[in-house]
Length: 204
Image (tube, rainbow, N blue to C red; front, side):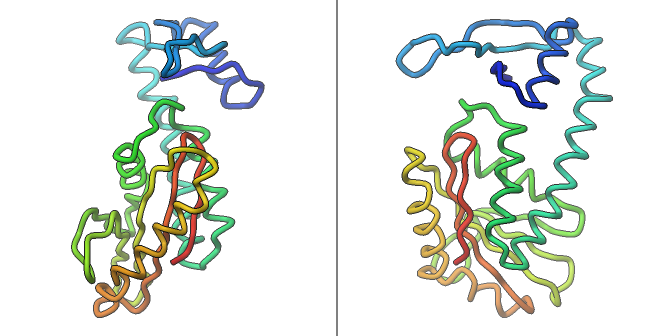
């Protein structure tokens, strides 16, 4: 877990937990070139008793926060509302992940966990059309809309838009949607690119 001293609500929570002893600083944080990152620290939970408090209170709060946005995100994808989907996913990224969880397999796993709602089945790396997609979100009823997602990890923030477009085009080129259309009433596809806490959602 990383702590960065910014004046937003999320960091106010971490500040409170740090200064009241519910978190403690383990070490400073350094970038890829070994330079210390100002006001950024690696934090740890000090003991088992506090860990139980996190599990019973803090983590339950975050689970509710995430679940509320999960259904809104899926609904936005179904309604072809790229802007709303992008803002919801961006908000979750800003609130949940470290700047240093910045690699493709992390984002893939993050989305699988985020999208695992009661009303849907989430599968990854399954064959469809002429290839294998990253993630599919399948409704319980074949009369509802299924979602196919292809993920990309961008090397820089400037490449986010082009990478999301490439991911969306891959869904079309590899015929991922056609592979599910025989089973579901409607199928939509999205390319999503990630760079640190930033993302772009692009409809295929």
